[in-house]
Length: 226
Image: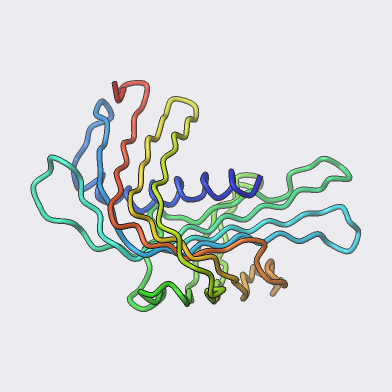
């Protein structure tokens, strides 16, 4: 399940990060969008259950520093520092979704220095505030995010990652080449209004990545890839 979460989060992040170049490329609703990317990324997932044993809180965070290029559009690669924050709460005792929120606007552009990651993939920090939109209540609120990553000292692994994500009327084909992947631990705070920290414990999973060459195509029912 966490692997699926991570893939969906990564796909979501690249959609968020790539949204700005898509607009600058002036792609019409009837066009598919093809982009290339590279950069340094840190991601982390946190899960905890409240004392009643009923409410599970899940937080996913990804941040990236890199460059993005829209294929067949005049102009060089665009530097981008962006993040994606996803929050959810589910009451298993009443089978009720309490919170389902994601960072907004799209993309969540970071101020200079808000996300820092070591090129050797042994550490990273994210310190930013973000507005998130809750699909359950329809409200937008601000969260304060302060997360630190530390590489576990394992041997970085280089590999090729490919996946396809499908949703209603949309398909994302993503492939990333020469990814250097280093497992990590992450800790810190994601504080919502009222002062509650949604990440009181260490991450369930975290890693630091370097993508040397990536390719993403966004297709819709009116703009098929094939």
